Every structure is written in structure tokens, then in C-alpha cells.
Length: 106
Image 1 (spheres, helix red, strand yellow):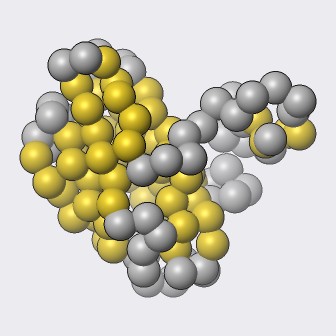
Image 2: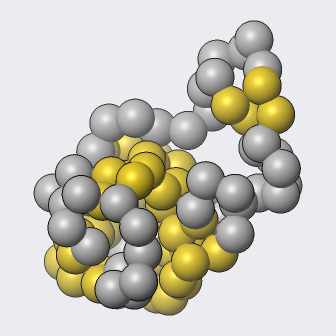
């Protein structure tokens, strides 16, 4: 598994992955997030119960896009120049809870 604590360089680690491979993760009992479809073609929906910030990183740890999600369904369009592949989506809620998802662009 790859581990990246700073979103700088990726390091090979024997420990369990700290990112999420499924399309849904629970922030806390009162705060949830869903990301779909996954894989997608550069457009995905982030469905959150409260305001959150998002960032998308490429496999080199470089920021591709970031923004804010408001409570409810939010469409996120990735830049058209992105290559097909796997990206890391980081969502941080107002209580500083963090969820990391892998999203695949085809």
C-alpha cells in the first residue's frame, strides 16, 4: 500500500492503507459523505450532510482541483485535461474530520 502523510512523495508502506477504496465513508454518526459514480468520466457527485471542503490530488500528490461542498448533492467537474487514472479525493468537514477516497477517471 502507498502511504502519504503530506501529499508530497508517496512511500511504500507495509501498514494498512489510510485511504478509502469504497465510495462511501462515515465521518461521524451525524455526518456522512457519498461519492458516486466511481469510476466516472470526470464528473462525480459528492453528497454530504454538512458543508465540507474537498481537494483532488493526482498520483504525484499534486493538487488538481479543490472547492467547497454544501449540504446535499454537489456535482464536481474535474479539469478536462486530466488523464485517465486514479486520483485521491480528500474531504474535510467543519469538525476537521477527514475522508480520503480513491476516484477513478476513465
